[in-house]
Image (cartoon, rainbow, N blue to C red; front, top):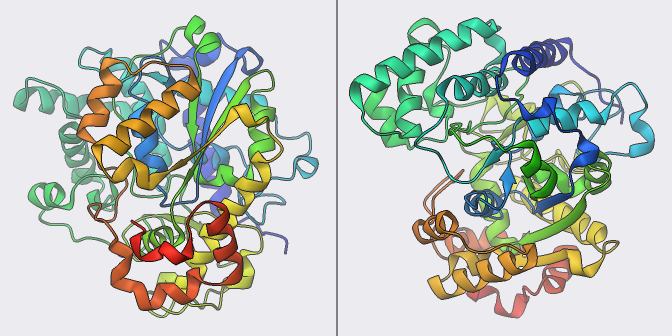
Length: 454
């Protein structure tokens, strides 16, 4: 199947690309000007199926001063640069290096990723102007259909900061975003605050005129899929830090893109954390997400009509919008029930990761269970110690503090042990399929012990 690129997709990406380029020239401390991708020496890649806890692990590790990280998933940068469905020959999230061609230079993409790097925990003392410049890029990814000029984004950000300082003495990113959204929504009511990774109670309290939406924030194309991140202020790394410290990366589509990551940073030592989750919990999390207000990844309406029972028959947008990653051969699932689509996504991502890491040096691969991060404090600390030893870093103060508080990020509901059991009768036929059961056993999730899966 050959993907057909819609003109609106190109227009939105071209717009956001223009904001990126303006940011590159105007942002005062942009590290992408000084460090080339060939100079990066270490990359740490969290590879996982969607809804396996990778956002949580990323949030924990990025608090360490010994690691550099991006502001969020780097999938929006893939889209802006055209390394994504529905552009060119991309009919899934998989990248065939031989088919990319020479008209897209991965060095440009790597430059944008380097420009987005941060160090350690959220900062109290930060350069607001530098933060504001970073926000223009993120907002253009979230609301490209507004086509606001760079200086207009800056105006809204600065106004919100003035209002924030009248109310608060210390920094809180969520509260700042409430002020920012108030400024934006006043003139652009099509912006719905519920699309952000902010608690629904806080949104309802501050935006009683809005209802929780159904469907994507843009009916045609999403660059960043919701829930949108609330970008926090962080310290920019120095060029020396970029050349010496590991860069932490996480995006679910990278389950299918390991060779491409290597091409982005050709001289870097690559360490891979394969984060697993049992198929029942993983499939259940995906099922919840497909029915949530977010996670709209691709409008596939130009190449396929979705007839996914439990989804396409519940929502009009469900006939064209695909959620989460787009595995190879996804079109074979467009007429299956939602739970089987979700099981297919869990299997496809983990099978692709297993195949990819089998070709890597074993000392550079660590498999970690999400359940060990969630089950008990003792298990959590044991797992964090395994990871930090694997990465060759120490548990510093900021990392320790984050592990102790265990933030909730990108969740459709508060974590709860064995939440999947509420759909036990639906999920068991899915996870006991031969291919899924075989892979689950390989990943040490014995079906004989499935009743104990978290």
